[in-house]
Image 1 (spheres, rainbow, N blue to C red):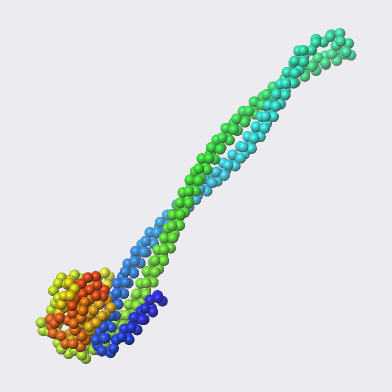
Image 2 (image 1 turned 90 degrees about the horizontal axis):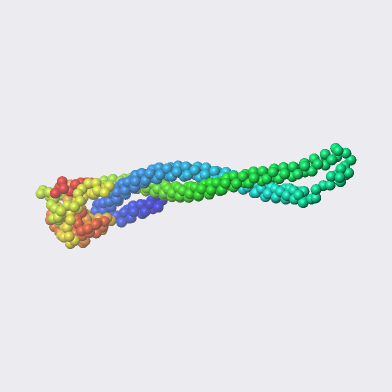
Length: 392
């Protein structure tokens, strides 16, 4: 708002400085202020329309952002679940690998023990087979009693049976270890495959989560931009409203001054035959609201350079450049009635000049705020714009 106030104050100061005390200049100031009010009303309507559009867009973005956040939360929860499952499976795989290494070492040890037991048993059997038969007399003479003889035979038998039992037990343990190792290896391979699958699913879930986060962040950025645009539209509308209020007060004051000037300088009555058309051509825009603001006259389409005629006899109160009107002629017809002719390419009368009804006062054009050659024709009663078609 601070940026617009200096421009507004400068505009008012310019109007005050360039306007002398004469009624014609008061009329020009009045027309300038009214034109500015119309422009501001149009801008207020545009700002309000933008505010409505941005508000709708902001609401849609906020809804989309909430949906995106919900999707992100769901994806994050799924990712957390998969991550926890992956961690558990990896820990299980570590345990299985440790167990598999231990069972492999045990199997190798049992294999070595079994091979040693078999070699010992084979050695004993071979030695017993290769040895000479014992001399009965030597055996009988080497023992002191029958009990010793029975014990020696029993001892030899037990050694053979023990070697055989050890070999059987070690062989059975080796076989069991091999089975356990195969089972563990199968489980370990299954766990590794499970870890691989869950790892792939986790990577995919993480990618989905990241894409959703990027979409959410994009929507959040859009929401911030829309909120900023909405705030700017509100501020602009408030600035325009404030300026319109000030200008409307100025317009009311100037309108009173126009009425006073007209009562002092114009006493002649309007032409008895009423007003005539200033030019011959189609009406392309009528009196009333247009594009969100007041159109204070009618537009008559004619080529550039077409002679413009006074609608009635009167006194020229303005002839010169006026903001959006371009080159403007205003004629006071007395009794509070005045007409204005805008967007001219050249002016053929001067302020204070008396003109007759139908007299050529200017040549048409497209100066000021105009989209093509035409005559903007206004009728004002006591400074207030009325529909010209009701007077033609």
